[in-house]
Image 1 (tube, one colour):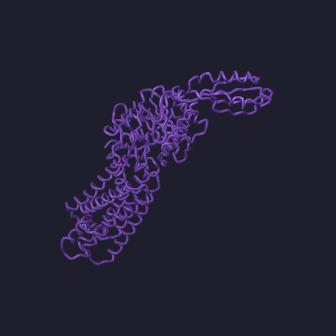
Image 2 (image 1 turned 45 degrees about the vertical axis):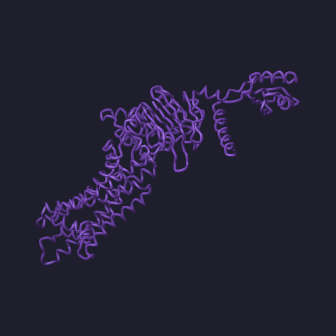
Image 3 (image 1 turned 90 degrees about the horizontal axis):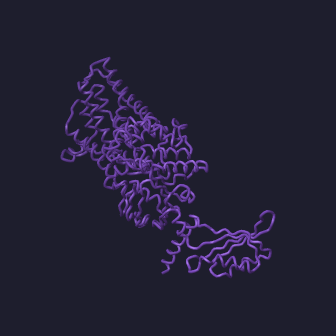
Length: 326
Length: 248
């Protein structure tokens, strides 16, 4: 559905996006992840045909966004980041205008409008001036606009920004439902959003695509693993004992009361990219037992997308710093 | 031309559901009414009238009031066309819809041109009122309105271009006023320079002499070509400007 090849965008000397290539297949729900200012909005604007890329090609459903712009744009329902609307119009008037501009056939316009109002759950404000709507409603009017022509592709820039928790849950539910018969590309800097709505994610930082893959694939990108242990350790020796175990890279210790009894909760991180790394956890357990510290619980840490994200974006900064020094 | 009709309708709606068009209509008609009243009052005190200086000829052709109110009306009508869309960000939803730059520009331009004509429409009553006391030469009145239409169309096209060049309505208003006033000032050259090419040029672009001719029923094709150029050129540049935003 989307093919982007070697996209770059420069504003004068500032490079906003640099050599980004990816594909989004029909029916996929893909998250576009990155911290603020990473180049997400710029990339989405290029895909939606609002900005021209300095270099690179974008094809939407096989149509080049520059050469066959109108045809390519006709396939997209685009929700910009700030959800700009005309405040002087009523919701129904605005959506009727958008349906007209997106060339919804006159006979079907009424039905398309009712369907979009229902999908975005804004029937109750259909005759209200946009001026008087709250941020949450405006966001949903924007969403209704993106849906009105039933486009095969939805590009949503930060669809849940500025919403309260209930509205966020509603919008995510709606995105999941829409994912059944639309291709969706959504950008966000909120990780649970990607985990809860997307099949696949791409991580962008400083204008470069750092990683892409399914959520599971991205999780395995995390280098190093860890475990959380609940210990009975009245003498508080666990910290120094574990620090001596080879392969352990970090230990944090805190007190914990469980069922009225005093325990110590210990978080261990270990390197996993060295040979024999998968056995570090066994050494940890045997060392603790040898030292006479009782283990009550052991939970291997499952890498969250957040860890991956932090690691990817941080290590990139580290590389940049090192590159600068060299 | 894709997207022309929805954009035209949206612009008309936005113009007439906000106070702007109504305020302009009221102020404009007040000024015109005063102008017409003074002219009629003045002429009613004269003993004899020449054939080509009846009240309507004076109103359309000899009154500076008419030009000045155009200089105020046209920039105010066009200032928000693109500047407001750029400031509020709606330009992003507009330009990512399947529309062509020409459709966007023409839709917006023709909406303000229609509004301009609607604002002028009630002044036809002046001719109707005069008819009760004397003869009205309707073709001559038609020529006068053709002149008003031509000048307005040119000024509005200039305003559309200026609005596309900035995100501030105020800047668009000032730029349009300066340009249209500049064109008007050129016309004064007709009374300053010695006879020669420069004077001829000034007379050709003079809005004032144009209205004087039109009000007497003289429809000169050269004038119409001038107006058509004044409409086409700014609109053509506007389409290019709108197309160029993508590469900004």
